[in-house]
Amino acid sequence: MILPSKNIEFHTDISKMPFQELRTEFNENTDNLEVVKLSLLKVLNALEEGMTRFPSGKINSDKSTIELITLINKEIKIIPPFIIKINLNLWTIYDGQHRIGLCRYLGLTEIPFLIRKNNLNYVSGLI
Image 1 (cartoon, rainbow, N blue to C red):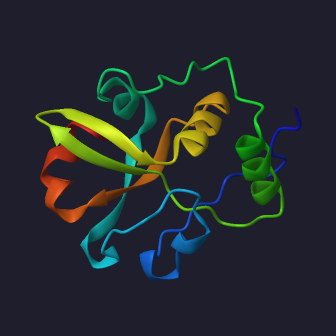
Image 2 (tube, helix red, strand yellow):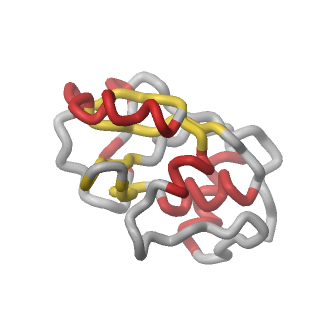
């Protein structure tokens, strides 16, 4: 598999994010979202049971991952993964498993995430 030859650039301006291009249907009110840079490992450790754990030494070689790498190599900014708080300190990935998996594989330690504003007071443990 061909790895990204460029750094991953994430969108940080929510108003410019092309949500319509996501494979997951995205019905969120973007006024209620915030971009927050979080520790990737802490997010992975706080995921609800059953969510993919993204081993650090492995990467999917499926069509979605290859398309993601192609976008990165074309220097196209990508939308940050979207996580939502589900219960106490448990989180789930609503959209972005391939992005998280690739970032983990590449050894990135902090990446931006989309988070609902009403969950911002819970992210301190993920920074």
